[in-house]
Length: 372
Ligand SMILES: Cc1ncc(COP(=O)(O)O)c(C=O)c1O
Image 1 (tube, rainbow, N blue to C red):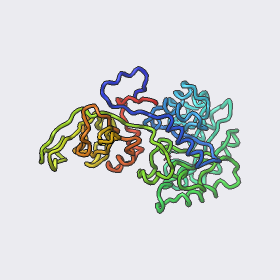
Image 2: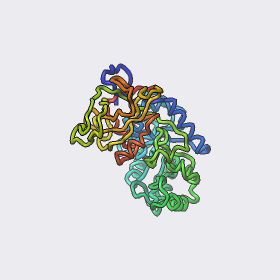
Image 3: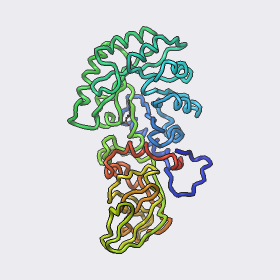
Image 4: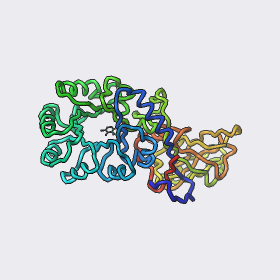
């Protein structure tokens, strides 16, 4: 995704990223987890929002958690002097020197990483987040091998932390439950004095007993729901950080029975106006969005406040069409919001059989980011 500097915007689409909303959401996390420090998770270009915007909006976080060394280096170059956690640790032994230079905290999740660290002659101890697999079966030491790994790295002088990750903190009945994972975690770390980190966004919202010393929120910092359903986070009073906006670039007058776009999926039930918007799947908008997916159109109602219009017809590469029957004032140049304050990204995701995470991360590099 391009940054706002020196971008000449001709095609009207843009993703405006609101740093004030970042600040608000980070404060909400602090209220929800007042005794924990916060790793703000900014992998995948800060869930599509750009590192620059995250740094500006989340600058009062206790640390940033991300995936790879290049991005850690970028954060340092941008002036970030606080903590950085490499969420999957190093991928090869030869990255440890750079991790040390960049002063990164390391996740250590497997035997190979533990050996690399033992063999490495560190000038200063690393902050190590030793990861336990408590049932998600993605990364982490089995509880049976965890204590040995902990003792070894502790003996090598590193500053140890306990870490695990929940598979179903956003669900009630799915296995493994947060309760079952926590039980395994707590039993395995008993007597091993070290700070803990386990809670992702869903656990912060719904599992107060799982907060630990360091929480690791991602999606809620961006104002979207871990469940994919916006109503589930309405109580948390979060704000959408990204507003994906564009304009109506053409208006078609259809007769009853006319069809719209590729495949002719939508058939006009009566004479109607259809707005064509400069946004398509090559911008990251989901091609699978169904007819009826909401789009907000500004100044379209008589009150001038804007109105929701449904998508009509299949989303194509650069454009999508909306039914303007509820928006008699809409015209070429009317501003539309694909997601943001008026339309939750979760609602678009639901209409496209996916989750907000995927849509935010998929916003295309050709969409300019405007940091506000
Ligand atoms: C280890 C780890 N912690 C925290 C997070 C943040 O998750 P969420 O965005 O659901 O809060 C992620 C993201 O997938 C993760 O991989």
